[in-house]
Each structure stands twice: as C-alpha cells, then as structure tokens.
Length: 358
Image 1 (spheres, rainbow, N blue to C red):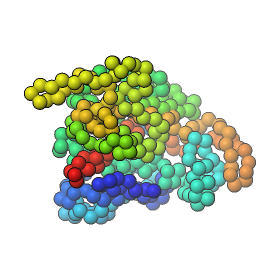
Image 2 (cartoon, rainbow, N blue to C red):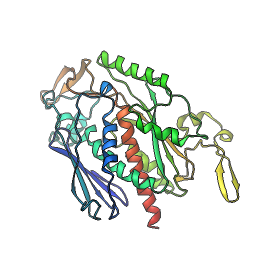
Image 3 (cartoon, rainbow, N blue to C red):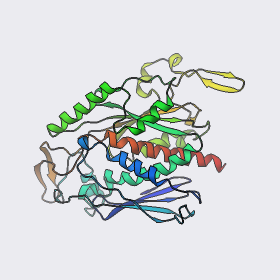
Image 4 (cartoon, rainbow, N blue to C red):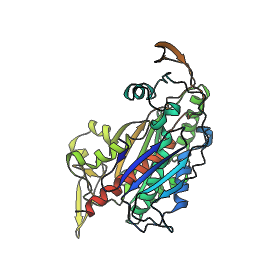
C-alpha cells in the first residue's frame, strides 16, 4: 500500500521517469500557511553535494494542486506534485535485472507489469515529496518546542567524533542543517569525502550511518508493544530506499554493557525530573520519557555501480554481465539524511496528535 499514518494520512504517487511524483496529505489543520522557502531549502538539501551526488539535477519545482487556498490549508487533502524533467531512460532494458536493486522482486510480484525505468515507484526519487511533508510537520513541531537534527555518523569505517548523549548541544546540531555534508569533525569530513570520491573513481560506491536527535519531545508519546515509538519510526525509516538497519540509543553497543551501566538513573528537584544519562535514547517501554530521542540508521552502498556484475535477463532466461550506466550516486548517506529528518518529523507530529485525541 502507498498510504500510511494514523491522524495524518499520506499517500505517495508517481514513478522515477514518469511525468511527475507527488504526495497527498490528509489531516493537516485548516488555516496553516506553508513556509514555501523552508520547503525549497529542504528539497535543495536532499539533492546533496554536486561533486558526490548524481548528475541528475531535478529542479524540484513543486506545485500545490489542492487543499491550499489564499495562502493557507483548507482542511481538505493537500496534494503536491513535482514534475520530472532531468531523467534519461535509455540505459534501462526490460527484463534485465540490476544487482542489488528491487528489479527481480518487482518483476515477480507484479507479473512483469511494473514500471522498470529508474526503479519506477520504488525509486529514491519519491523521497522528494516526503521531504516536503517533513518540512511542513517540522514547522508545526518547532512551534511546540520540538526540534530535529541529524549528522552523518560514519561513511564506511570512518567515524565522526563521538558525542556525549548526556550533554548534547542543540544549537550545534541545528547548525548542521546549514551544511551540505553535516558532520562535527572537519578532519572526519575530509576523510569521508575522500572515501566517496575514491570509490566513485573505480566505479564503486559506499554506505554509512545517519544519527538523528529529537529535542523537546514530551513524555508519553507512543504505546507499549505494537505502537511503540521505535516501531513507528522504524516503519518509516525502512520506507527510505537504501536504509537497512536501525538502532535506538546505544543500540547494539549496549548489548556489551551491564544493566548497572545501561540504566538511566534519575533525580528530581522541585518536581522537575532529570535523567543522569541517556543510554536508552529517550524511549522506555515504547514510550517517550522526556529525554532526547536518539537513533541511528544504516544506509547501504548504492546498488548502481559501474563495475561489471553477473546477473540475469528474465525474458530470455540467460545469465549475463551487466555494467550500470546512467546518472547515479556513489554514496546516498548525505541525501538520505534530510529524508530521515523529514519522516522523523512526520512520525513525531502524528504521534503527538494521538495524545491530543485522547
């Protein structure tokens, strides 16, 4: 299904090489004036740095189709579309399976009726409308004192400098939104960029991790078990093409620790509760505890590489060697980051609305 959400429902439409892509958002409050400048800034961030991103440079000039009148939302479904203009369909051949892509399961699931150009509806191109959604939701969250920021935590084995989760600097992380390659350590950034360019030079690609922080989240969002905050965020993170892993707080590293070290001890002064640490990443029992939410997603190396690889032609039932051509990224971590923030904003806003409906 292409529809998701509880109190705000979203539906994606379009394909990578089709006339347009877009989103319908149902459930936004009436009277909301969209910050079009912020939306354009968010779309620009998603395009990434030209020297390490795909040569496909879409203008992403979005058009509001419905649900917006005299500069405010009407309460009706808000539909926004983005024309596709800069695609090249010539490298794609029906039935030729690209290693690492969803071509084979799509072919089998839809009995060969899927749009195979550029990945069709399964393409990362469809994350552009999600960034628009996130910009709208983030603006609403900011008004409630909730802020979201992310950094590139690693590219391959190269790590950004460690953060003390007990002393996270909100302003420092929010300033990273101004950077096309947001890391804290300049030396690490140089090494990461060098690793991406080296892989690209030999027709290969690299992956990495994105770490996200949600500041100011109130206590009580989410439910135990099936509607936990971790479940909701994970569902959305795995909707992003290329995301293959997620961990909350210290995640897998915490499995090597002891309970006495992992428990976040607390104290209270005049009714104000303070955590002495944040190993859990701001969530206990599936419910936000008032601490900063911290989670990290793993992004695989892009599948479209120029090295020859063994694959199949499902039409002729033959084994072939395929060398990918066209417009592709040697690394998508820096482009995935604003999409992670966008879907985080949607998740937190939707969960916050749940508390308002009582």
